[in-house]
Length: 109
Image (cartoon, rainbow, N blue to C red; front, side, top):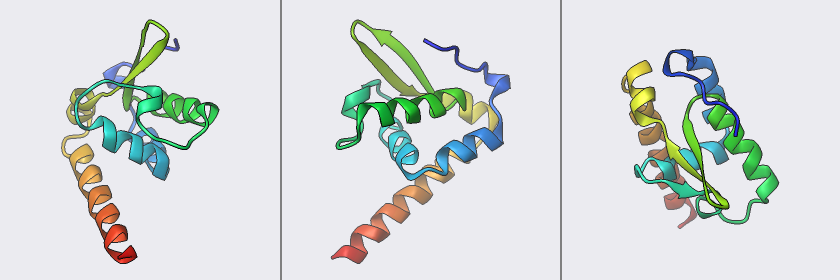
């Protein structure tokens, strides 16, 4: 398993670039529940190889923790580290993503 950046190594540009991808933002929205999730339980219909890439981008940006657990890898959000580095950023991004998702759901009705 590759190393996670230390808290002081997390850079705003990397976080924003990683979360600029809709699938990665969706992953973070799921992980915002504060629980650990297995790789395959977060999003459906995406090939494992694609998910591996997205999880690596999120890990390298300092957004998620990954830890091996038997044959699985568990993902969790680095909320404490992100809130310490960039107070309010994660909450603002998650709220905006939630509003955007609700708006697109309403538009389809």
